[in-house]
Length: 252
Image (cartoon, rainbow, N blue to C red; front, side, top):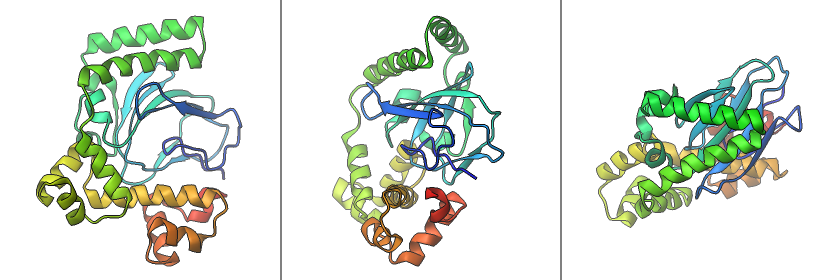
């Protein structure tokens, strides 16, 4: 059955060309996306990506924390979503919670923000949608997140450096040395910023790179070499462990 990924920047197989759309957000490093659940008998597979999302789901506001493995969404066909996906490490400052507290969780926004503020925001978004479209609703969400981004102050450059070093394949010891902190401090900061330690973050970012490469038609052997796996068997094991299905199924 079709498998859709609404978190990692694209759609693996979209049974409805209008079901999922995304664009770069005005909030630095974020992506604004919208999605309509397709008429499919199978759940939709959302891949882990090290990100946190602020989501409007048919009037309900929620936060999706960073996943350690694929999340299966099985809402009724036609359910509408509009979301802001924040780049790895940037969500906690905007959403107001350490990433590890939301790991593998979907929680109501009212669990993190004052209930009065959430009700006011929900009412505002409802009014926007009443007189406009999902695109207008997304722009309104961007405004709210953008204001919080400004209030949070400049992003921590160490966090951005961590992401770059982990993407480059450095082990935890190398990342700690390059950033000038101890491995214990690195682990703590990674938990707060990303929801998990540098090793898990590295596996997830590497897997996403591999899936992106495979989608372009690159051979799996080349994907394994370019993405930093020991061999094609290592690629196959890791992708299945993180997503629950073989790489070939994800890109079919």
